[in-house]
Length: 311
Image (cartoon, rainbow, N blue to C red; front, side, top):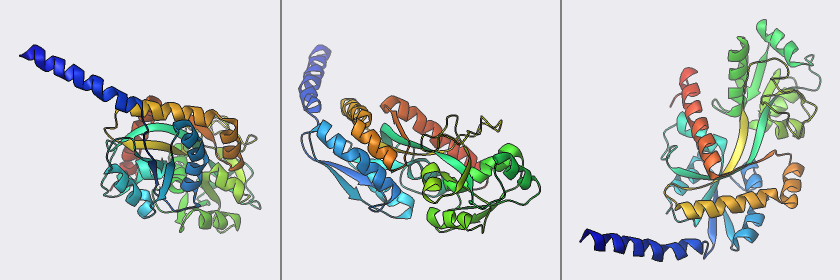
């Protein structure tokens, strides 16, 4: 009796395999949890047409903005794990929001497919600022003279000054704004002393970069030293984007998507478009991205608890 059951199980698996091997057999929906034209949407549309060609099917972008990306991410997490609903998520939505507020998803809700972009956070000041180096800025902070602009508490532009303050044992006054653009303009106009945000935003607004919070220099700001080069604390802070599938998606489908992503992000056309948009390309396959994602999720949970932002 046991022998017959085993045979049926093997037969069922064998019959199921061709269906997985033929993936995808229809259009694939790609949820972007922010509005059209924004940073996440732009990053998604850089890779989307190349994935379409490689997968041989339509990859239809569906924008679902609201609540820091959590509306779209929640809808996505509840989707059938068959590979026909994917999501392109930024770090803030994937690993920060679930640790800041009550949402209907967590680190076990997603299967990471691949990372496509990883933008280091840079420390910058206004073009007319008296500070011309990170050392000068930190020395002023020791005297209680430095303020930082940024978006809402828990955002990257908030976490940057927090980590700098902890790493150098200084106080940096944080002034929240309604979004990154307003925060950048505040630093640009000298209303605050500094801004810690992605290198693309710093370049876009013409701020004076002092350092990048990374172990490697940013390709978009190659002349700006890393915090390691300046002898500072080993702070690592970046705004990354990646492709996800709902938890429970069959491994052959994840492998197919991850391989397609690798091929897409290796294309010259993709690399050129990413650099033109002032993003920093970085590919991680499904296994690498999963380990990175889990480390980031748990690291943020610990940090937010330590600084009093735990949900």
